[in-house]
Image (cartoon, rainbow, N blue to C red):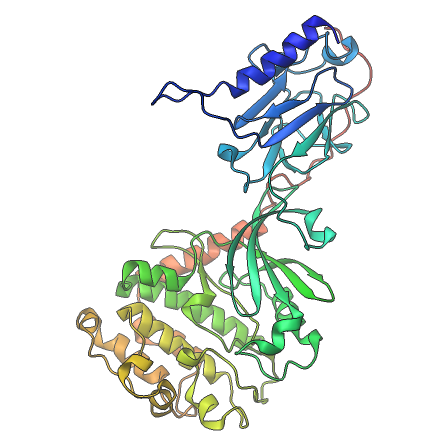
Length: 467
């Protein structure tokens, strides 16, 4: 390697790693989150320790390509800023992006990225410039390996990031599609612990774990969570779901103590449309609760989606459900009264909706062990009250609707069509807002995903251009 090449390599590393403390004027040890190895570019390996590392002909890039490190016939077609590799704040839990800024092409593993488009890099990816066969660099990811035990079918298509949460039957992780860079939530449900889940009984056959996935694949509604991918393995089922950055409804209620009647009505309106859609499709959710309701954003006025169909089941119009399940605080009395041996219908979802609305409006539960008697006995008797101070600011019509939904006799309990026609929901402003949110979601779903390969990119001609 010539002295000029060594100087260029040293300058690239030094320029990105010269981070100094403004407080103590002492150098801060940079976090090296990636490494570039020269393949057909004559450079030493480069540690990546700045958030955005640029490569191109211009002198202000972190790595300047010149005739000393690339052949002239390639160099003369390199753009001033050819591509950029970035990792947000150098955070090792975040993915590494490569963005193509070139006129003549940046390729990842032989496939063109496309001008101004991004892809997510993974360990040992090969970066080519100008032509697919001009392999310039090999990328090494120095972040932790979060994909241990995850099937290759998922790891090859998704970057596995931080854990979002876990429950009795599964773990949820944040993942990124490597091609589109879109965030998703990956739910892993382990088959060998299904029989231990408190909310599922008679899980004798591991194929039952696919129940949630098979249902969700058929669903298409703006207020119902969408599944984008599924991988079935002997030990687990992996579902790639929409990522809802606003968190769940329970967290929202807890953080705000309680929700205003207007926002409660907006959320309830959307939940009812989701349940209406499910019931019309012959599906009973059976585990409706604030934890299973996800919000699109952190705004008060936001889209809502019902999730977690692990307890759902397809039923015929005149069929009954016979499985004892559901979260105890939200479960309908007929389930407890029959101990799972009797029959119950879609009206169990109406009861759960009543409990959810009660919780939204007051920040309290209608039934709880804290109230002195066993919660099961309270539910069987429909023993609840509006004595909490929060109810002073809630309209009587809202309370009436809750009382109707929390009717112990399911034959007298209203169905979802009745609820949607209820005068409490005949609020023009809330209805307009709810419809607009759902309409926007439908429009968004119909739009092509960013970075999707709608365009037929042609590899730039090999013919040499004048420099």
